[in-house]
Image (cartoon, rainbow, N blue to C red; front, side, top):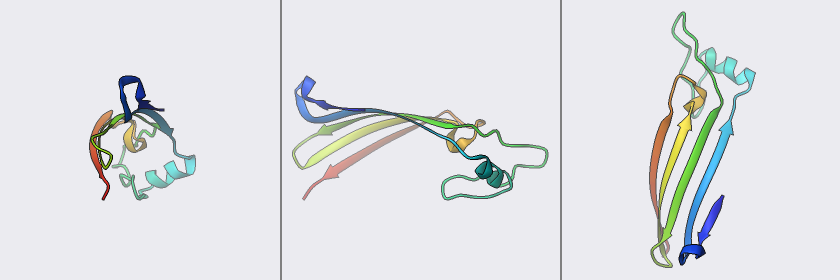
Length: 104
């Protein structure tokens, strides 16, 4: 969801909120448990006698994009990830971000 800043007299600003939930198929979980690696996740095979606890990954996000001028905007972003990389033994993790957009 995103809202333009018209209500607070900043029509070029945007505030946003988001939620995403991702899961793994049983086949993908088996692949990772056997030591498979992916582009973004993969811990390798668990140590002997241990197993990983897979869970759906949930991420909540909020951001504010401020228009400084017509050509420049800056944004601040915060994300809260639960079971990052589908591993229930990890997290939650907080991710902070900032970006700047320049037009020439």
